[in-house]
Length: 255
Ligand SMILES: NC(=O)c1ccc[n+]([C@@H]2O[C@H](COP(=O)([O-])OP(=O)(O)OC[C@H]3O[C@@H](n4cnc5c(N)ncnc54)[C@H](O)[C@@H]3O)[C@@H](O)[C@H]2O)c1
Image 1 (cartoon, helix red, strand yellow):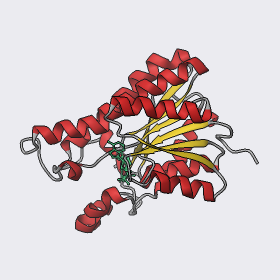
Image 2 (cartoon, helix red, strand yellow):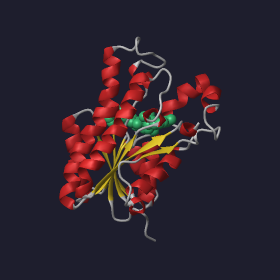
Image 3 (tube, helix red, strand yellow):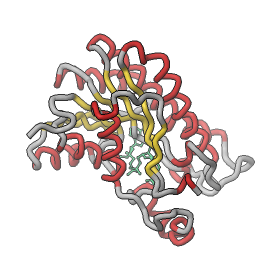
Image 4 (cartoon, rainbow, N blue to C red):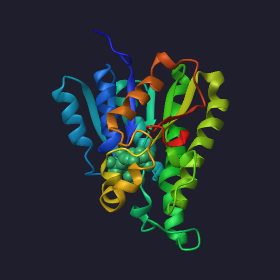
């Protein structure tokens, strides 16, 4: 049986947890050979084990997306193992609480927290794209998907640097889509709503009811529901799509 990504080589950052792990599994299930990248010890090897147990092909690579040398080595590891890079999902990210800025307003956030948020959630995406594009161009093209968020489309309370970074990811996606369309590289963004992953466990425990009251479907998304959208954007089913910011949010941004 041939899958939507049969024979393709795919790279996922933040592949050791949550949405990234679900996407690695979905891509492998569609026939891709997957490079699972994450911070050391963050679960990439476990994702690879799950893929292999299901009969798929994958390798784990340690990579901090804010480190130029590590990002370059990550893409080199893809080419060395699988000879090409067809699909890249730039998904690694952190929440406001990870920089000690959860619930803070513009006037309260420290410059250090602001800079770190932009470094991981925006500059990290740019850095990955820079090396992925360099790998894809000589091979005739590819498909890149970036994880933005509902916070890339509208504002969210108490998450200002996160909101700015995720809006930036959409700007970066659109700019890159225009610049690389003539080289057959498509670049799209997926904008998840609230999804049941470790990233939002703490927020759900604190104010789950109030979060769900803002979602027309009145439930959290599942990581695999985002993964299916990413697979579609990576696959030839979406060949005329580039520069799009696709909400997968249970209706959150329609309200
Ligand atoms: N869960 C949600 O509700 C939600 C909603 C919208 C967008 N998102 C976005 O989806 C993406 C995935 O988040 P998730 O919910 O799966 O969270 P998660 O915490 O389960 O996974 C995030 C992964 O990114 C990795 N990561 C963090 N910093 C990194 C770095 N510097 N280099 C490499 N890897 C790094 C972590 O180790 C982790 O494996 C993030 O970009 C997040 O902002 C999540």
